[in-house]
Length: 563
Ligand code: OOB
Image (cartoon, rainbow, N blue to C red; front, side):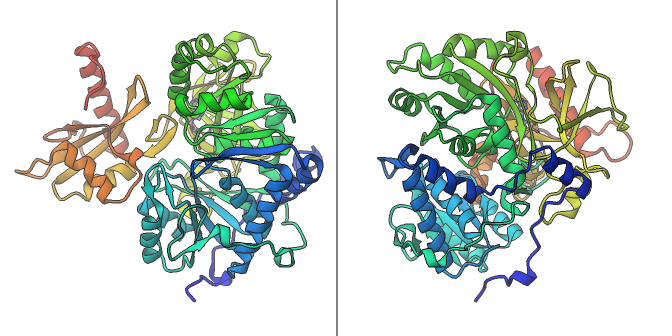
């Protein structure tokens, strides 16, 4: 047995000081519900209503609440029959398919802990999550978007032997376990629900330094965030919510997302990908009422809506978040789709801000909304950590009833990311209006927000530095018309050698990392000009290179994106 014995694992916990926990319970935010518990209740309440619609192996599947719950219980029993023990962590890497929900709720039902990976992640990331979370199992689809996950699973298993089981949700499972081999065995299932204060799953952060950190969220805090989101976003049993972004992202999961929709007894429609070609016919056929998108997709949809033959008139609310939607883009989205726009500024660590549906149009266009909860504490501070007045711009810190106090198993990140009194340093630079709305101006940390996907500059640099022909590398974000930001790598080649840009891009594939981390633009330089005496920090260097590039592009009259 390679399994990491329970007693040797890092304990999972997310702990708020007792006076805060008492206040959040007193205020009715934390109600002692669990993720599996609420779905069981909905199955009893809404048995025959449609819970989930989506494609699996090219076939449209439609599950009622009762059927979804049956799938959940079968999955739970199957995981436990493999020998997995409550508390074991399971890396889940599934695309947008109905089984995403039967698997994760099945894990909740069994007391197992999903660790969410994205379909784009590759060996490097999956091994990191599996190692960091001390995972015992890995759930994949055989193929998704032309990629062979069985081959990846073999590599992951070789790299991380403690990961004992691979479960394949559809297609040929090869030497691994097929989800369809799971049988309902009610006797195996725990009779008691999980502790509502316990950690339900590990979400991944859009790491600003190095590899992603793991975010432990509890049943109580997460359920509060989507229950309160439902009220703000007007999600009712009649709503039809579409998941168009990757299902494992916090935004389409809980803001209010699929979990909010299921909590409300609404219908979740899972679009296999976010392209208008795929999503528009589903919107028309299922009468979708709400969907969340990142800004580049919202602009694409607004453009495609002008000529589409599909009837999009059921759409009531288009939520846009994950990256900054400029006022100009907001106007274009409203004009193109003709439905209500809602800006969403959130983070997997917790805090979520929404513009309200009845806000004045200027607020909806110009701001990224205000927090969900009256108990979300928001501080905007200067370099010295002093609180600033409304209207001034500074660093956003926050704590509250659904914002974590610590990452999992990462003392260094925790020391950096949280103040002594438990505020999370979001890394975002914002202005708060006198009405308490936030306007995102930029960020303090060096990551690239590429179409909503957060990429650590340091992580990309590390991959480049591993290349034999690279002497030094600095990676920066550059404004991009389509992506919002793109990844630009400045490279000093080794003496006498000059790698070609396409080769460097291929290098990332060889390194087995997600394709969204590959630099979009590569600029070769002879040296980094260190004008200051002594060693310049990476942060300053990146800022200077970025400024030089922007100045140069402006001088060339912004002739569009470069390769
Ligand atoms: C969402 O979550 P993450 O964890 O992928 O990324 C969080 C970061 C924020 O700190 C901020 O830098 C950026 O993404 N961000 C925005 C934004 N929404 C997120 N920046 C500007 N404007 C916005 N509207 O991205 C996320 C989680 C839940 C709901 C929505 C988004």
